[in-house]
Structures are given as C-alpha cells and as structure tokens.
Length: 142
Image 1 (cartoon, rainbow, N blue to C red):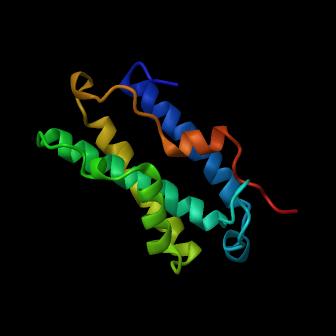
Image 2 (image 1 turned 180 degrees about the vertical axis):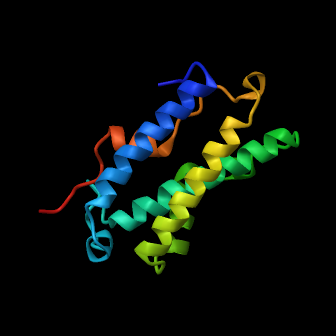
C-alpha cells in the first residue's frame, strides 16, 4: 500500500504502531524474550521490537540524507544483510531497552514526517510497523 499524502502515510504508520503496541502490551518482560514468538522464525518478540526500531531509525537517516542530497546510507547492503547485522547487534539487549528504543525511533520518525513539506515527501515508503502488524506476525502466548 502506497500512501497518497503525508497525512495518510502518518495515519498508516500510527495505526500499525497502535496495533503493535496493543500486542506487545500484553506481554511481560519474560514473554518478550521467549524465542519463537514471531511466526516462522526463532525470533523473540523483543527481536521484532528491535527490528522495527532499526528500520524506523534507518528511515530517519534516509530522510536526513535526502535533505542533504546524499544517497541512502544503506544502499550498499541488502535488507537481509542489514537485518542480520541489526539482529546480531541487539541480541543481548533487554526487552525493556528495545521497547524504549522502538518508542523513541517511532516518535522521532513521526515528528520528522510531520515536518516534511508535502512536496518533499518520498513516494512509495511504507512502515515496517504497519507491515508487521497487518501481517499478524506476532503471536501472543496464552
């Protein structure tokens, strides 16, 4: 789904984040750290939190690079490479820290998007949070 306006893009991202917040809100620290909570993977729910935070942070970097007339920093690597690197870096990070990182990244991305003039908004962007929540990849135990 491609958003037609900045407001629509923000609404899509906020709705996806609200759905994820609702799902993650049902989990306690121990549940967030249990491997296999993400459908079809050995990821814990905390790993998805870090994954989403990473991609929202990357979106912020991309916006900064675009404003400076630079190519995206991640252009040299595939999404799989970036995901593997991020997963390795955050493997020992607590669920509490990853939850805070994800909330901070989302808030910063939403603020940045709200401050982009409509004529400068990149087209075709979609949100990791919206995508993951829409696809139902989080399993809630119990």
